[in-house]
Length: 240
Ligand SMILES: C[S@@+](CC[C@H](N)C(=O)[O-])C[C@H]1O[C@@H](n2cnc3c(N)ncnc32)[C@H](O)[C@@H]1O
Image (cartoon, rainbow, N blue to C red; front, side, top):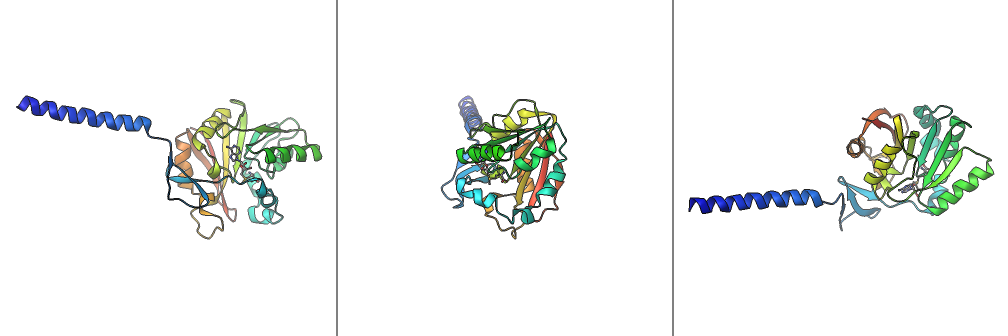
């Protein structure tokens, strides 16, 4: 009888641990929930809902005249400490608000890789580079999972108001990490989620603790932080 009881408990323990390990192995990285923010996608990553991608109709908003006074781009550029000759990427470049501000900073010997997933953004970037006769901007078409950056070659990847809407943040950030030189950096500019007075939709904001958690799983750590912008964090990460 004692033998049978032991066999019973052994079976329970073994099958329990099997369920646990098979759950761990198959647990999806992304979770779909039916109850979610109307501005979100219903897909959750590490407890955060992924926002909907801003469409080409958003170009007008990205180019709005008051953006300079709201976002202080000169202060962002100072925080990036760009040098002539550097290879920098503008991930989710949109209409090029930061692409064309970074291009003169890295000069003719440097390059800005302007990366986006949407045709209209890529077209706008090409047209603006041609109109401004800027030769150190290379436009790159990304996929949802891969920004198609060169491996081990990039000094800085700038990600302004984009990270919260990446459909596959884990896969993209793995590739971004691979693209960095050993001392390369990734700089995020995101609206402060910690501040309820920042007038931006909740799923388009990001907290420092959430971003640190999401970068830790791809081997990136916070190396510096600027909190002097009116509405946004500037959070700079490097390899561990
Ligand atoms: C809110 S806009 C920000 C544009 C620009 N960074 C700026 O500050 O003006 C977000 C941009 O990210 C792009 N985007 C979304 N997912 C992307 C991905 N997986 N890879 C590259 N770009 C992406 C969108 O197409 C859009 O142009």
